Length: 314
Length: 239
Image (cartoon, rainbow over all chains, first blue to last red; front, side, top):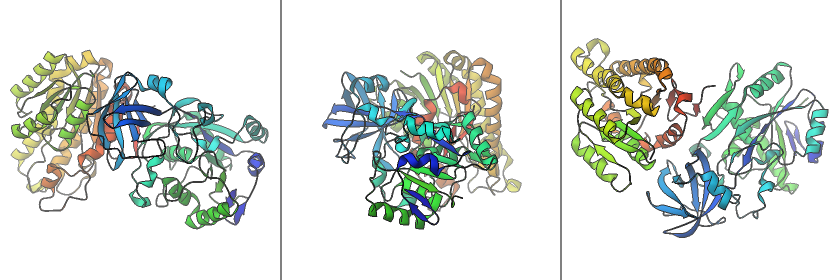
């Protein structure tokens, strides 16, 4: 589905090269997905520890859940220990404002535990697929706990067609955290967003600025890319930048670095949807989503795609 | 074991949160504050965390007290993380600069500027051995020029400049320095700064935990000289 000011049109994903123009730039997230769901045992019995944000290999923000389909918060207490195989995870403080997330410190590098015991994080709406199903063509730097899925339908074939049409592809890195908690607070303005680790390389910053200088359009492939590029944006353009971003993009602050967003279909009342409203306005999001429902589009990371233009395309 | 951390002003507010957080991270701790009853309470609350913790009450403007602290971190194996958190708000209610007591101003500078630098001088040989990190706690009052914040604000502005200078001077010696503005928080100091006002809209100092988790996970050499806002939306690693 493509949303412009004057309405929605419907296409196959392989039409994408013809929906863009020579000189446009797609920016993709090169973060690869980790098997971040760990089986853990402790005082509460067998639980799942879904890792969310890596601070260091032995220090993560994590979401303890009863099972894949049954969320917390779990009545864990500070300083209690969980066992993951032979390894120990120390339960530390709750994340401020998000009771479902806790800091956890491991006595063994979490990368080793994921390699040995980890599965992809999944929720009740989809089964657990094999790990390669959670990677995209552009997954290069492991660090996400949920697939940055907007680029998933870009096959080698589509990529080659894009290149043949003179459409550039550049990469950023933003390691995604868990998305489960977004139902915790249904008031968009009161949402607490945890920070995510990101990097906008110099080459990509230059490519974005050069595209704009030549009158081309920059299309973020996924909300993660919007977050990274907007964090790196200054009135002089996008700069190389890395660290942790807690930027919450909503209609009040708007977007500057991008002209379009290629994304999936998002649940109501999530920060993703607030971002969509920042790009095209609430009216257009409502109109597009009504059309998506009418046309039986599929939601979530294995669902259909949606291209939104910040302004009417020529 | 992560190393030895020294946190000043650890009896309440942000310092207490930092002491709790760092011991949870596996740092062995030396904590200090002027009010021994509060310091004792923090010490007791961290019993059973499995790290070594030594609480020494006293005033960091007292050279003999600083010597005790630095001897203690040395005896435990050498300081790796120094958090200069103890701060003096100055006269309450906060005066305008033109009518401020100069003697009281000097006391604020002693606590907020001179004592942190003295602690750095005295612990430098330990920090060099561990390639350690110094964290100087700052304030947005150091940047803005708010009315009646001139005493505290100028002391923190001077500390910010000292942090940047130290970062440049100590880079070849592999000691790193950052300045951190924790943002407004619901603490005793905030209440003292706004006597009689309702400060319940300010978040508890726990709001800074994600920042500390991020900071202690960075390679200190890559972030030295930076000034961070713990409640800000970007914690940047310079190129």
